[in-house]
Length: 390
Image (tube, rainbow, N blue to C red; front, top):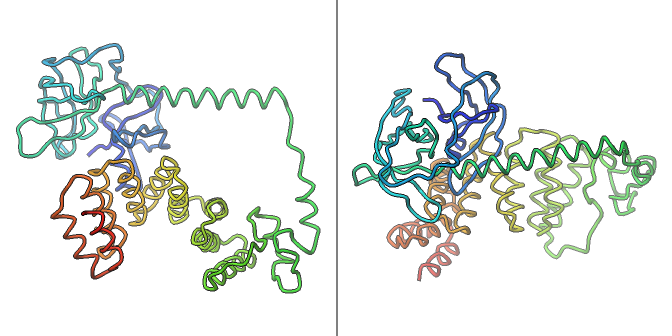
């Protein structure tokens, strides 16, 4: 089944963002051409489940977006998709209704597994929407995301590209370079690093190159009350000092900082791990949780998405579940946690978070089931979820 269903100009394609969660390698299957690799994820709309990607190919045909056309109830439409893998299947129908403020399009043309992401066309061949989902238990209750969602993503992408181009032009026009910091030069020559708190008699990093390759704050802060956390932080710092190019060492350091509620330092540690190993899924996942801690939900979602593109980690699905619960997207949150639990059945936090999602759409029976499971895993979380229910 082809993941990409709707082609636009400039090698940009649309698909359902949910397709990204289960795959780590993407190719565009073209009817009259070989497989084409996808370059990058350009943008996505989490709430409407739409993503834009760029493909490595030229000269591909494209579909026109119906930007100036207002979809109307009763209008004839055509859907081209791959239901159950049956490629380039054409079906027709009408627009049954336009639902909600966002203009969700209800259509009679069938949407089967494999058709998700297909173009919904008017009789001029213009894209009115993207086939999204259907409701079970009824007949011809199929829905499509309106094309204005895609138009908005493209406009944001264009604005971002213009801003980047202006920044480049400004930089070329000024022709200025940032002067080297004297402090960096001094730190590389001094036997006592500014990161080691001046205690060069006991610090193993006095001759280590890590003092010049990282800007992480290794200096001692005020005494940490919890001796176990203090010991964990010191061991993590030693690991980075001893092997400054070890991405795993920075992961341990980021975790230690996060436990101490030091989000800035934790972010720096995880980003350093990514610099060393750009495809380190665990580092993106750790960064996602730090961003979640400080309320940067969109940035956290991006980090979890990058994680899942690289590797299916239950922690990433659980993080996305937390965010979607906070945003009131309880159905989406349920799906996230079900993915997490399919990878790790005894994942305590995922059972708790899916319980919160069930509370969101008032499914008390499902919540009580999660409470029973949590009683065997974590009695405190079980009690907390019970309190949330009542």
